[in-house]
Structure formats: structure tokens, C-alpha cells
Length: 249
Ligand SMILES: [Fe+2]
Ligand SMILES: [Fe+2]
Image 1: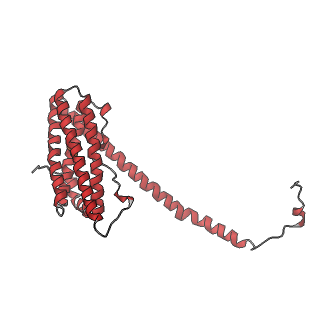
Image 2: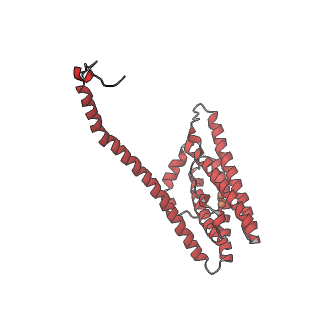
Image 3: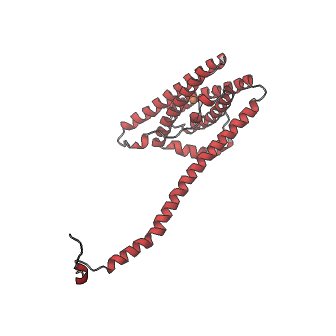
């Protein structure tokens, strides 16, 4: 069994993860979303295998890409199996909520602009984060042995990816691999901050619009109503001097 220590934050968040995975709809949605992320990551790493000048890295990237594409298939198959099982039950929810959304790791990859050093540092941190998360997910889906087995299998590969990327980074960049890792950590943190800030800005924008709607609009609505109440009902005769039109029509 693959062993990996989750971060303290992830361990603190364990009840939240358990709550998220306890709902059938969320469980399926997350599995399908993971499938997309793993498949996209696999394609990117396949591209890295094509462009690297290092023969050993090319072979390792290739194995890594095959693993990630396989993870995508495993997640998709498990999500589909759950969906099929639910379809046979009377409580079918066929709304658009099933569409996968979001990602959690390899989705920031940009192969064309990355050197092998920065790519390995980025991959090491992503795989480490994925291994920590998958270890928790494996534990919180203990009511569902098939989903648990999928996480168990994938976790084993993620730990291998986490280890080989570190070893290879130390091999090709022995003098500066620690700085590379710190730089990659800082970049991850910055991207996380930008995502949180963007989400917060969205919430603040929505709140301000709602406040405007409920605070600024009611006085105008009241004034309009009062003006309408002053109007006389029905036709209003036009004074004689105003009815003498100068228009040819
Ligand atoms: Fe993976
Ligand atoms: Fe991986």
C-alpha cells in the first residue's frame, strides 16, 4: 500500500472532504472532473516527452503520461459506473449538474515555456499535493470499496511520480534544485492567491450589486409609484391652445 503523509491543512480539512464526498452527486462530479484533469495532464506530459533533449527524462515522462492517461480512464469509468447505478434507481437527476468542473493540480502546466528543471519542480509539487489529497479521498470514501480501490491504485502511481520528479530534478540541477523547488512553491502560492482573490472579487461584486438592488432601487420604485398614483385615470383632455398644432401632420 502506498504511504504518503497529507499536509496539516488537508488533515484539518478532512471533515469537509468527508462531507463533500458523502453526497452522491458531488462524488460523481468530482470523479469526472478528476478524469478531465488527469487526461489533460497526461497530454501535457506527453508533449514534454517530445520536446525534452534528455533521453532518460523522455522515457520517464512517457511512462508518467501513460499513467496519467490511465488515471483519467479509471476516474471516468468509476464516475460512469456510479452514474449507471444511479440511473437504475428511481431517483434519477439528469440535470446539467453532472458536467465536470474545476481541477486540482496539473492544470497550470505550460510545456512550451518550461525548462526541464522548472517542469520537474512543478510536477514534483503537483504530484505531492495530489498524493496528499488522494490519500484523504481514499480514506473518506470507505463506504464505497470500488472508488476507494481506484484512489488506492492512483495514489501508488502519484507517489512514484512525486519521487522520480524529485530524483531527476536533483540529477539535472544538483546545485540549484532546492531553489527551483522554492521558486515553484512561490509560484503555486501566488497562483492560489490570485484564484482566491478572483473568487473573492466575484463574491464582493455580487454582494454590492445585490445591495444596490435592495437599497438604491426601492426609493426610485416608490417615487415612480407615487407619480403614477397622481396621474388621473383614463383620457385627459388637452387644453385648447395646445391642440392648435403647427405640424403638417
Ligand atoms: Fe495522476
Ligand atoms: Fe501523477
